[in-house]
Length: 94
Image (cartoon, rainbow, N blue to C red; front, side, top):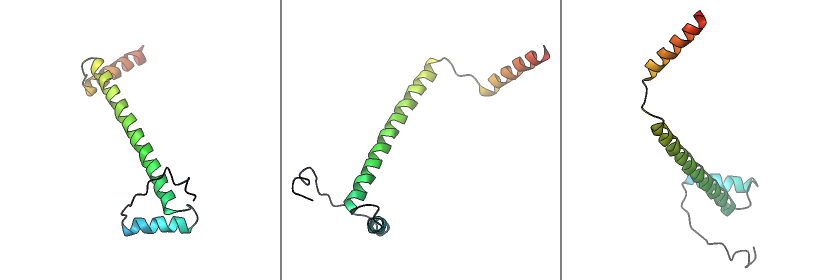
């Protein structure tokens, strides 16, 4: 890699378990990746995406929680099902 290509890259040392290091070596040896750095870059991109997805999911959960609170008081589930069953039975009898 030329000097210009390395200008925007920072070298970082990462400690891996022996199992993880072996996995990295295996995929590089198999030709799936050109280098251990490429494996780590992809792993970090995936990690970043999962974090973003998690943040969006937490935001959505908070929004739905707020909607639920704003929808009014909670209703006992068994009681609600009993009312629904009763209404269905009335319709069936008609």
